[in-house]
Amino acid sequence: MNNALPFSNTELLNMDTPTFLQHIESTFQRVFADGVNLMEYLPENKWLELKQAGLLLPFLLEQHGGRKNNQFEIQEVLRIAGHYGVPVTLRTGIEGALVLQPLLEFGNETQIQQGLQSVFNGEGGGLAITEPKTSGSAIAREMQSYYEDLGDGTVYVEAEKYWQGNSQSEFLLVAAKERKNGRLSKMINLLFVPKQYIQFDVLKSEGLRAVRYAINRVAAKMPANAVMRLSENDALGLRAFQNIFIRSRLQLVGMSHGIMEYIVENTRKFAKKDIKFVEFECKEIEKRYAVSQVLYDYTCKHVAPDAPVSHQLMEANIIKTLSTEYTYDAAQILQKLLGAKGFESGHVASNIAIDFRPFTIFEGPNDMLYAEIYDQFTRVTAEEKEQGVKLDKNQTLLQRIKSDKRFTLTALKERVLPQDISEFLSRYTLSDADALKKVFLGKVVAKLFVFGQTATDDAAAFLLKNIRQDILDCEYC
Ligand SMILES: Cc1cc2nc3c(=O)[nH]c(=O)nc-3n(C[C@H](O)[C@H](O)[C@H](O)COP(=O)(O)OP(=O)(O)OC[C@H]3O[C@@H](n4cnc5c(N)ncnc54)[C@H](O)[C@@H]3O)c2cc1C
Image (cartoon, rainbow, N blue to C red; front, top):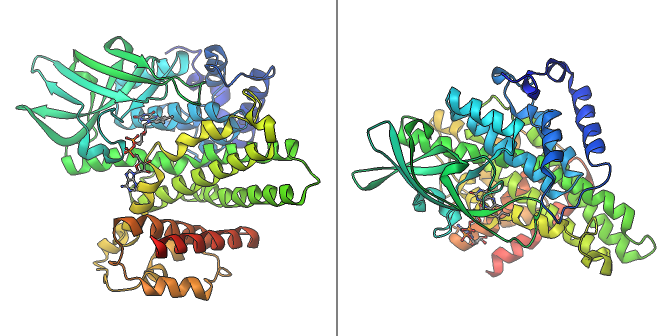
């Protein structure tokens, strides 16, 4: 093993959490001391320096030579990276949550060693799921990429993938279905595909210039040990595939919260101080920040890198949608408050909104996730299923909120629902919503989940106002 790798550096592994995080913080300050141009590709030497200083070590489980498993450290490295711009934290998230975590969970020893060398000593890798010709929202159903076992120790892989973060790096983990006798199975597996098998057309993006994107194509025979089987069992395999996203959506709030802090800092630095309306808008940003803090704390407290997350699909979707929606809102408000400066290319705050916009699209577009939140809320939880609980579909949304432990376990005693919102929730039964209403009701459910946990009255009042807006949308759609 190469001793230059951070996971063989005992000093980095033995630091306690505050010392380690301080070390990451000061490494960022040193590496970006002369600033960084986020309108261009992030310089590879700076990125490598950060990785070699241990930026991604919290994503490396202890059993693979990483630091002690600690969710707080994962969230903190993402948050700290967010203070240096959207692409910086996004690259941390791509290589940590989308590459390292699935690689360590599903890869064999050879794939893991090759992947770790590329991530810690090279340009790293990306995760390739979405396809240009099918809807990214209907991943499992519509995916057309496949591999076929040729029986001679090789597989033939045919895949066309779209918008991969870290395209052109050293490898992609490519999602594909197995094809047997000319038919695609439902089961999705990952393939470890080194770059010599990948052809790409660079995608020119509106923002995120500091990350490379492309349409990636594979049509090649390669050793059969490229396949990373997620499970031997079809149903469990799909669940394992879904779990990659549950975990990464739960963790994504580390990135968005870091960006939120960066927005708050820049608001304080650049917004005019003596205009009443500007003051009001600055407070609007602060309220979104307060909600973001609740979401951030939820992940730190209720997620662990070595514990399963399959039971937290609703929570993951809530965290992903609300954290990205509120951060995107805050970025737009800041941009507006900067006036013409907010339109200057390269201004420290001008590209936050454009760079952040795809967070509301990737890892499941928010509108689809809101509809899913509603579905997950109106179905039995894993725990209820085990206890033989059957949900009465004629019960009202209010009754369900009161009986669903996911809402009661985390709720603060002082958070009581106002009458108008309770009345609205009493008017709908679990089976009342069509596909359109589900999106608005999902928004209501998501905000109620956070409302119960909100420590400050300001943030609680802000959520209630937002819920009332969603209720209006739901009533008038
Ligand atoms: C900057 C960026 C980075 C990305 N990074 C990666 C990556 O690293 N790897 C990768 O594989 N992919 C990546 N993607 C692709 C991304 O995951 C997909 O774009 C995303 O899943 C949405 O798929 P789509 O574009 O096909 O949109 P569609 O599925 O066509 O959806 C379009 C819109 O329709 C609406 N919609 C769709 N379904 C529903 C529903 N059920 N209910 C309500 N409304 C709905 C939503 O408003 C949605 O935004 C990235 C994309 C971008 C822009």
